[in-house]
Length: 240
Image 1 (cartoon, helix red, strand yellow):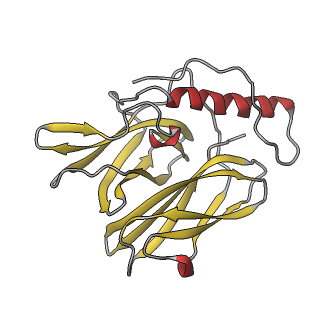
Image 2: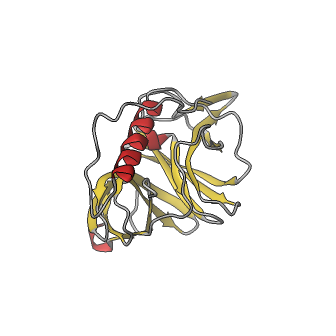
């Protein structure tokens, strides 16, 4: 498993929101640069995290591609951030990794954050069509060494799907950042459930949500959400 050990020069600073110190500004820029560098390299998790339990892994197919929904639980008393994750399918005797290549969005191969003793859903999407009968799998590893980021807690981000916006192809999600920490590259997931089964899922990256600010984002859903119950969640990416 690769780890991001190098740090890019602080060439471009992220936009600012509210009162921010030079140290915070530099730390956020460094974090963004480190993630960008890491995303360029292929990743395969070979050693499982002792703290994160992988629950149900669901494969959702649709005309627009495939989504993998992974239920995760942090059994530790520590907030975990920037967790590497490998997802794929088993087809016969073949193990096909879906997010191992370099050049993917960083959060297509990493879980942004899981609070202490908390549960989250993480979604991977691809335009790739998978073999019939393929069975999905997921493996979460420990954070890189040295750690990409640290957090003692997570900023409060509320994600609420707008029922009236649900269409055949997607849904709009209302986001509210109730914290003093601006978010860059916020990860937003939407999941449609019919009974106990996920029938559609999607993800989006929101470039910026300011402190004490709100916005909405349109998520494309893979699968069919007709008649389904839709839920959404947002995983923060900036922690201080």
